[in-house]
Image 1 (cartoon, helix red, strand yellow):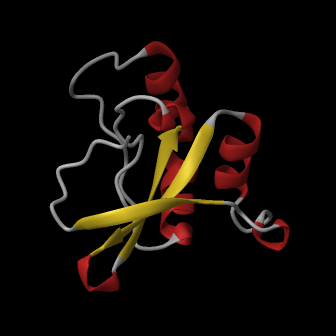
Image 2: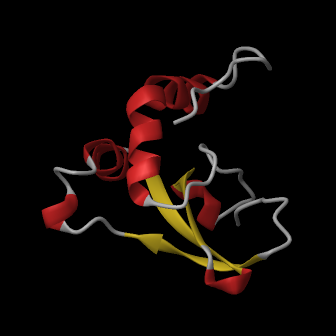
Length: 105
């Protein structure tokens, strides 16, 4: 279960990247196919959609998203291109410091 403070959240679903989009979304494709990460599409009130990267552990226990939410897969891809190493480090080794910041798009 994904933990969120968003009161507008209605639900969500896992997104599989189609084969023809994998070259466009290389970071997302690599993290979801090579590692245990999943892209969730979060559905909010007023039919707004957001995308986040989570560990596949969200299916079994409460967990937080590894990224902020983005309104498109391309925005998530751009964020991952700048922050994949920090996300992996944080996921594998835990957060080093509370002020370790991720770059915004």
